[in-house]
Image (cartoon, rainbow, N blue to C red; front, side, top):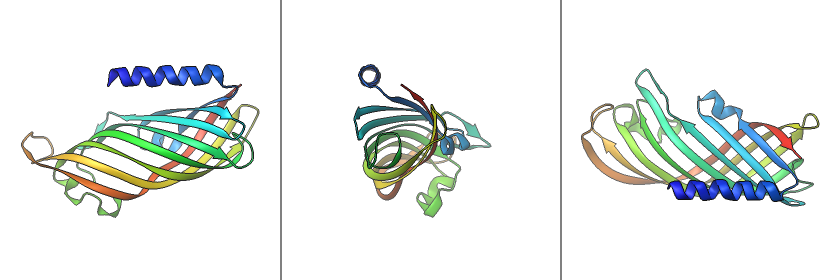
Length: 187
């Protein structure tokens, strides 16, 4: 795993060195959920960019937690010009999580309130977004995506103890990306 992260970091630096435009971003919606995040977007061609974001949440609040780390690369095609206006994207995602004591929307995991789930998810999706230029180097971006995720998990007897009840998986179709990002453009 460490080799993969080093390779990913090296690849990003190589793209950034070659690219004439690089954006550093933070998703304000993740910030609102106490998930630390950082994204880098590099120009590959006049209408093509590569966006890679990473998120990390190590916190527990009042016996509730959704600890996780997530990486989500996305290839974007811009309708007008890169870093301006509308874009369509294809994204992938991979995450590892440890969650307990919470109620997710749409009753995705009803047992999460009384049990602890630990595992990983992976999948892909498509997205649409819009990028607004605010000043010479500052921008905002809104994006929404839908797709698929395969969730593999282990379920534990109670929130804090370690008796494993079972393992399983769930196939999920629905929203896979949501963002309102503040961006600093480096040229």
